[in-house]
Image (cartoon, rainbow, N blue to C red; front, side, top):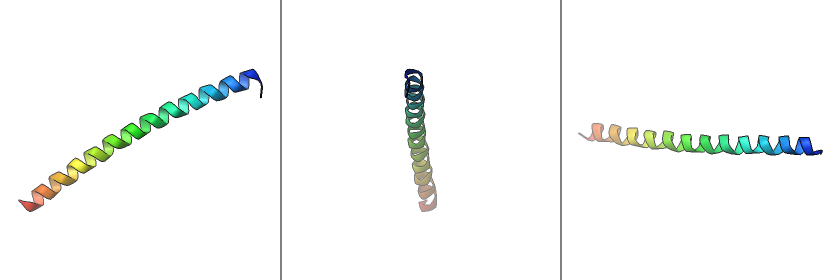
Length: 47
């Protein structure tokens, strides 16, 4: 692998890591919202 290909590979990898990280954070938010929604539904059912 030449220098140019290596630099391209590293920059692609960096983009992948950043995007994966953003995806995981978004997933956490979705899970938190789902958890809150579930708690509200349970509270409504109990009342």
